[in-house]
Image (cartoon, rainbow, N blue to C red):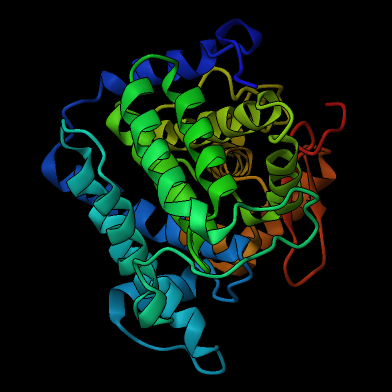
Length: 340
């Protein structure tokens, strides 16, 4: 069932895009820096959603420095380097031309070739199943026809519905076909982001800490697409907020800075302290589930300092930690579903 445009409000998303568009065209150095930034972020998050054990910092080392990580499975390394190659190929597909079936096969080949070369870039010839799902996947014989239909649907509907809704439906339709023996989730998220990029939006990241919600909305998508569209819309908005912050502007919708003792957001008596805490809070708000080491790396602040400020912000009742100590992360109280 296709989501009707008026069921979901895209107002904040469109307002954020309009503000981001005022920064265009970005200087070449800035554009390259952002491309590299999301190359790491999307590769890490998309792989982590599928159980890859590399942290964001380790993913950066593997991709940018070409180094392996001691004690990590070789497959995890190949998933990182392969996804980075597929991500780079996305930018070739942003041209003003129809999507081709060969483009999708190439995306999978780039991602999967070092993992399982015989199956890279080829549709599956065996039945596959998704654990926890009550919906059977198409038999192998139907996959080529379904993929031709998918590409035709993509080219027919691109530009005829809200880009975020279109991107979410691209993800759903592709993953319900599950055309490859493995790597379908990674390719689905790449295609979703391709749809966003071709419409002038930025890369959108699904935090690994949201995996349960993500899978639940995917499963529900067999019956109604609205929850998944809304889920992706929220991810797009949070990524927009992060990009606005990176460009030096704070989204009005994000609100709620860390108050100083005098009642201001960045009181002059403790301006430096509150400025850092606001940056931490904004990073958590835009990337729910982020952990202390990743905050340290992203904000270029020592881990000990980050941990000290996290405790202070937590004591202030603005954030909460969710999950196991080793793989959990921080959420703003609002994003965690609690009352502010």
